[in-house]
Image 1 (tube, rainbow, N blue to C red):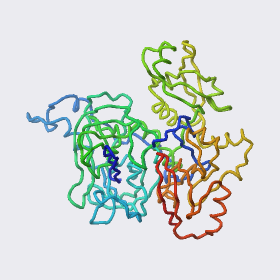
Image 2: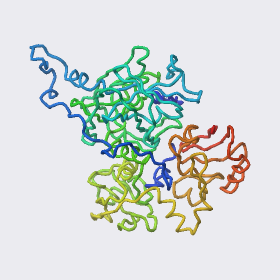
Image 3: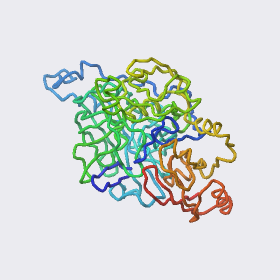
Image 4: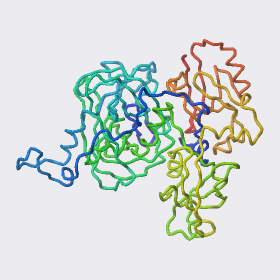
Length: 504
């Protein structure tokens, strides 16, 4: 799907101004359901096994390289990668009841939006973008050999724009191994492969460029803007329909999942973005096991370090995050983190800013003990925190206020609705308004298909203004157990007002 910004076109292929400062459930305003929907794979095998060996360095170390057939002719270093792994890239066709799919991403032959993906397990697991499969009522995967399979949505995470599909292959399939993205350097080669419109003869398009930058964040892609951003920027062309395809290194390893471009024209101008594969490696196992991401949580409010704070803490550069407040009984509190501390290192990685820090925390496995380096009044202090579960943060907040879960929560049409109190607004860093807060959305549910996301505030339900969970329950009761089309007026996590229609 595609969204146009008033000044710059941010193109999400094919298819939040409010980013909360509190980490975990409250960082970036992301609150998770207490009881996640599960979608367990048929096999208990590891989620991301190294099923394919990367190419040896002797084949990919330079340009040009000797042809593999032993002749004296030369070829680019990209040929071996493409020949080995291009057949792992598939076309993903998403049929949807949503008629608002932009025409430039609609596959007119099939009446469906079209994107890309790639096999990463030999038993038929496909990695793609969440926005590629959003609102889909039927998913089809077409392979390089021409096979078409009905695909099942295993799990999706709009907060990172990642999704996993499952097919039952009737052929031997090629898979792409996961590499690493943490050690990428600006100037490294990058190969993008997409499979946008095979029905039109445009299958497995290959483009080549370099890593232009890493750690890109605060990008805007309309209402589907992911909250957790740590994008790889590349000048390898990412064309319409190529979203969800792999970004590869010269060893044929996936280092990213192609996702979006910035363009004033709607076509590639050399500014493309890919989700780092290390983020995918943290999210994919949860999508397979639970159907959604299980995120780490510390329980702190943050702000970026200013130049003045950097001088006071004797920092050599303006980097790190300042702790503005610590939630009582949170993992941060137990670890000894204090208000005024500046976090400069987390789990062995230097901390640059609050956005990067939120990504680092959210991708740590729940229950894992991680080292944290802070500066306190100019002195280095080494701490260790056992990362908590975002799904439990709402319970912690309620236990502190004495609230009762039966009173403050409601599950309806795939949404977990909670009372939007002034305390919750303060915790997630937004202005309080009358409405109810969407604490979580089940993948594949009615609310998910309608485009409702976590962090949304519902202000009208069935054309009736609602200011509390009690009022929402009253309207839900009027609708009965089998409502037809239910209109919502919502405040999106990016601050925009939108209308949604729930069609059970």
